Image 1: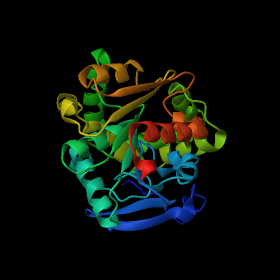
Image 2 (image 1 turned 135 degrees about the vertical axis):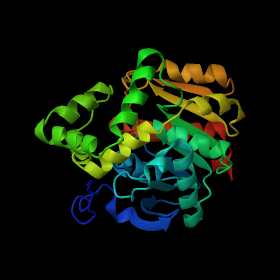
Image 3 (image 1 turned 90 degrees about the horizontal axis):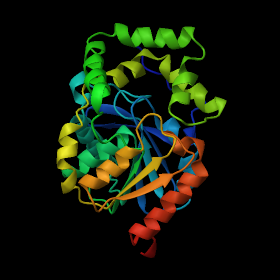
Length: 297
């Protein structure tokens, strides 16, 4: 049996807790954070993360935007759907249902890693009508070579039982450096407090189960095929030190969608928005200014 995080226990010191609330939508109970005034900006985190990953950048973005972020289905404090709903189309539909319940019509959307792919799927499936889509180290294209042949089948095997989630959580609990090694592998340098949040998540079997099943249900081939139909302008922000998603991915996406723009950031890794929140917030402000007329309204 997997256990979900307890808001009154693990969430008592949650980043930006004052901006949090819980919302019923699309058959789930969502943990949502909203802050700021201005044009609507929606943020989607990646696999295995939560709203905590926006902890430092969210207040900065709220200086000029009305920002909405949420824990994705099964992640963090959001309730867990059936495993098959943790697919890309399933999560895109669920997030769309949440935004409808919140009456949020985002002008700008930004997604990190798998969050970027979900936003693209939402647009392609008619769930979004935004002026700009920003991908932050987006996991958009299928893994190539042996990695692509290995990871998806293994994730599907692991997803068949909750024992795998319990094993990963047990391993994280037994080896105090396991999560730090994973973070170091992303190419990002995080504070100990930020690492502590990931360690807490890694020890929670419910959160880990959702991440494993999300990976097991993830099919990027259809997204790659549909990319030329993407409607809003796309900016691909990629960290030069990203150890999780090869920086060349952004340029491969641009080959498929020539109208896309690549912003290459030297010295930052996969979790760039966590290691350099002020730099990333300023970049988002600049991109919105250059790519839209939002701030002119």
